[in-house]
Every structure is written in C-alpha cells, then in structure tokens.
Length: 209
Length: 210
Image (tube, one colour):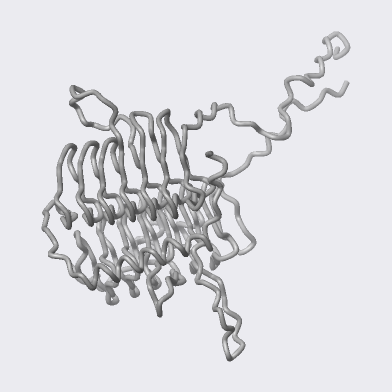
C-alpha cells in the first residue's frame, strides 16, 4: 500500500534554516550626523528620510524612536530621550498642510523627553525643556526655554509657550518665576546625569553613522 | 517507508519562559541589565515591559570600610507580583553628595502593576494595586495595602501611607481602603474563575497566566 504512494521528495530547499530571519524589510537608515560623544542605545530606533542631527553627550535610550519622515530632526547637546519616547511623530494631526515647506523638529540643549512622551514633527523645544511621561507636544508647537510639560499634559499644535511655562496635567498653565539657585542646581544635576550615562548605557552610535 | 516528520521545529513555545522559582517572564519583555534584577518567585513579567536594570549605583571609589560587598541590584521584585504589558520600570536617580546616583528599587509581594504605567518609585510595599496608565514619579514611596486609581500621577518624593487610595493628577489621597480590602469574598463560595482580588493574594492570577 505504502509502496504505491510516491515517496515525498526530500524538501531540503524548503526547510527553514536554523537561524530565523525576519521577513519584515528593515527600514532604510536615515542620513545622520551624530556627535562622537552622543550615546545611542542598542534598541533605539532612528527612521526616516531626512537628516537626523544628534549633539554632544545626548543620550537616546533603548526603544526610543526618532522619526524624520516628514522633515529633519535636530537634537542639541546634553538631551535625554528616555525609552518608548517618540520624537518627530509620523502623520502628526496638524491638519493644515497649507504652509508647505519642510518641518524641522528641533530640540535645543538639555531637553529631557521622559518615557512614553511624544513630540510631534515640526515642534521646537527650547533649552532645558522637560516633557514628562505621557506628555504630548503636538506638531508645530513652540516651547520657550525651560518649559515643563507635566505627565499626561498636552500642548496643542502650533501653540507657542513663553519661557518657564509649566503645563499641568489637567491642562492649566502657569509661568514659573524661576529661582536662580534652583535652576543652577538643576543644571548641575542634569549634567551629572548625562555624564553618568556613559557608565551605564553602552552606545552603538556607530551603527547609525 | 519512514518519511521525515513534516512538523519539524514545531515545539510549541509558550509566550512565557518559566524559571525554576516559578517566575514567568515573557519572551517579548524588554529587559536590560538582567544581572541586576531579582525576581522573588512566581512573578509575572508580561510582554513589552521595560525593566531598566542597567541603571545601577556607581561603584564606590573607596571600598566600604566594613568590607561589605556593594550589591549592584537595581530592581528587586517580590513574590507573586504581576507586571502588565507596556509598563516601564526604571530605578529613580538623583543627586546625592555631588554624585548622580540611581537608587535600587524595591517592589514587594503580591503587587499588581497595571498596563502602560511608568514606575520610578523608590519602593513599593506588598499588596499594592496600581491600575492602568499610572505614572509614579521619581522617589515616591508606596506603603502596604495601597490602591492607586487609573490615570494617576503620583508626584515625586510623595510618601503614600498604608491603607490609602490615591487618585488624580497630581495624585493625592482620596480615601482609605475599606476593611475588606484584599480579602477575597467569592473564593470560598463561587470559584467563578477569578479567585483573586485587588490587593489580595495574587497566586491564583499568576497560576492562570500562561
């Protein structure tokens, strides 16, 4: 009985190799200009077609995403982008595409983007801004120096905030008077934190160059 | 005629890797700094959970005079704790004596952490229930039997006393957990498949996660 059945041809070609290879095509690497002292963690993701510039001592944590599909992304010195944060979010809901041009997403020096926070494409964040966890800065918004977007707060598209504005989680705003001593302390702490990452986060920035 | 078994390499891989002590860690969890993380046993780490064990305390320049070995554990999680999908757990850091230091984070037993939270607490005691989409900002301390409502932001350095309910943005104490918190009512009578309650023993929940 079994002899009548044609024997199955040995499917040597169809056998999967021992190493599985992802079938999803890897997105093309964006053009980058990365300062040699910047730290880009292993699983950080840089995607897009425009130039991504990353300044000195900036740290991109694992699973953070920098997206430059809509325009160039410039990140200054000493910035920290925490895990699961997104900079240059794709398809930002800025509905008016009337003023074409290229939208540049720009983060000045010492900006901190916390976990799960989002910065839309074309947003401009001044020196020392902080976007806390789940905070959203929509596309085209402009934040002055030392603005703080607290957890779950939202800055609408095209909004302009003056320096030292604090956006509270419930949508209210206030302008901090700013205390020289506190600010100086914060600056020192930030610098020490950024420098400390050299110890704990291994960099694979070469991969993206 | 022996034909080659067609179903090669079809060993059914579960989603979770189970360790000897009963910890269940998802294959899709994003864990860095594995040597610096301790799990107490019967603890579940679900998919897409980020554990940042690589953020450790800097090594002391001068060794401890008592000769005590400096431990490098940065996250320690107790028994029967469940960490749900999309949560980020990261040890908090701050300036201390002129050095930027990360503080080891302790999470107790029977703690439930809901989906999509960001946890940077200094310590979380046992029988704490953290609902979904919460943010625990750096160095807050959560004591025993605390319930944190959904979408809460617990501010930095806040100490939440035992038996309280925390909610809002910024989080404040909105009440106390009642007498029956953590006591499962239906466990004896029904056995309706649930078998676990907020703040109670999570062993049953851990058991059914596969």
